[in-house]
Length: 327
Image (cartoon, rainbow, N blue to C red; front, side):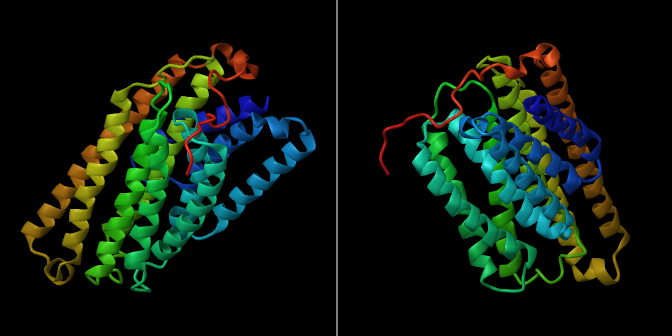
């Protein structure tokens, strides 16, 4: 029953993300997907399964955490809450497609959670401290280096889980490096009313959605008891190119908004160019939409028959593979 609920929470998030991709992803929707993923992980934890009271206490604890995150201001959710809540899912996914030890995973998770919280705090208070220009990219790059261990030592997992996790990490890196550049050139105090701020928040939100899409792949494969692809590369590349290229176009449009001529006396040519960029960004939004539709159709086609197999054992071990490599 719990796995069934977790599966439907993730499916609900993915389906609703389709229409919201045209406008803006709401944070509450992503929090529902993240909670669904965490609920599934808790439901298959052999330690929690032994004591149902401990299990439900853990579920309530994580539910309270998601509620707390949902009531803070929007930048804090995008830059701190969503990445930090994504990390537990990423580490569980890494244990599915990579050969990593449980001891390393526990230590690495603590380190990366602190680093991501620091980077998120500086992103939320962008430009208030020059230290952020160094702290943001360094913290995020260290987090990315921790995930490289799982990518470099893959097991026989055949889903596209690793692809979606890699996209999430790439979007984090992009947001971190771009935020550092904004601070270095001294424009952080002027981007709040431009598309540049929107791009930074969008990349962090779509990184979270990529983690949820990775969970959808892995959970469906586990429930079906099949080590195979659930969704194809067409959905992945449409989504990835749409998010990356479309937001880079919006960055250029945001740079035009910062130019003095555009702010005070924009010429008709500058206005036309700005609208052309907005239309081009909208075109890439359609790529995101198509990618999500294809993903939803494929995961619907390969859904567990009648969802009756939700109590079956996953096809791959839940815990990290007992890899003997030392630190």
